[in-house]
Length: 215
Image (cartoon, rainbow, N blue to C red; front, side, top):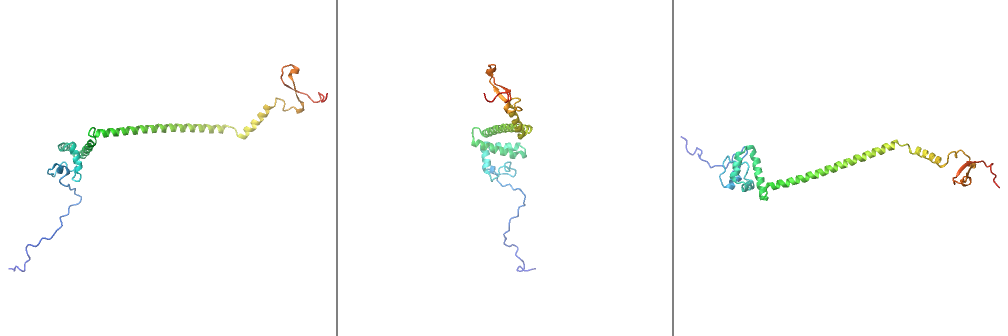
């Protein structure tokens, strides 16, 4: 039988130990949720309000509870499939916040205001499209005029040949027919009054030998 002095003590003083580590990746829902905390009730494990009203955002449930009431919120969530509950909660919170801002019209007032903005933007877009169409038509008209001018300039004769042809025609118009081939000393003008009294100037051909120079 061993002596008591050789044996180790059965009860030793407890040493401080760290709490067991939580497994990473596990979603932990803090309890109680914001809804149960505001309602002052015990939040159960399968609380229907806990996934949508976390304790870090109590204002969210307070806004919806002020307009719809807790019983209506719970009943609505229980009647919906689980994949649609998050959208339903967002809609209730939005409608409750709109009702708080505008007690008369609520979310309908915000929807009407947004609809008026959409109509105004559509009118601006229509005016811009009309101005763009008018600008394109004006540009096409200018391009057509430019093409006509270019075609006309290409079909016209060169400028030097035109001047040469114009000079010859002017010289022909300045002189009467047959004058260009007649010597200058063979031209004279006879007053028509002396001949027939008609006052018409006539040109004739005569040589200097036909009439004496001195009388």
